[in-house]
Image (cartoon, rainbow, N blue to C red; front, side):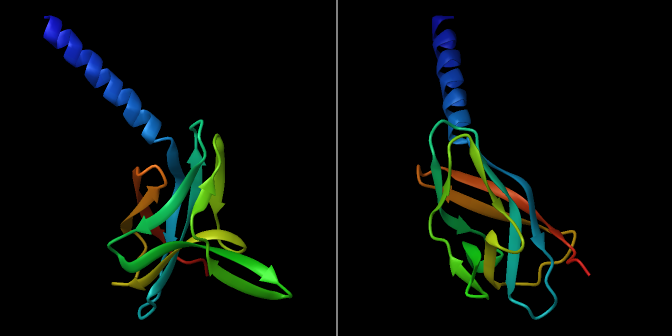
Length: 144
């Protein structure tokens, strides 16, 4: 009886610790469908951090492409410029939007096959604390 109580307490502690590691979530995730022959795709959503500590996305992984990363789009002297963002900070109790147009977005480069509407692509965000967040990104048709 005493051993089972101890085991239950330990498992409850692990569950609470697991919840704190999952403080970063992705809401509204989606990838834009790509035409045949295009080997670059883009993804969007909102990275939300409900934790008390700021977090950084330090790497993005997927089996759907040779590489995945977060890029930023900005306008400089009338020209749009896209750059790899490097580590992306997600503030404590805050969020960062990945959106079409200016700002941040997910880039998949070297797609292994076109992204077709109706598919779902697993993407893993690696955080600065070593935790990993896997998110299924549904693929949506590109707007006409």
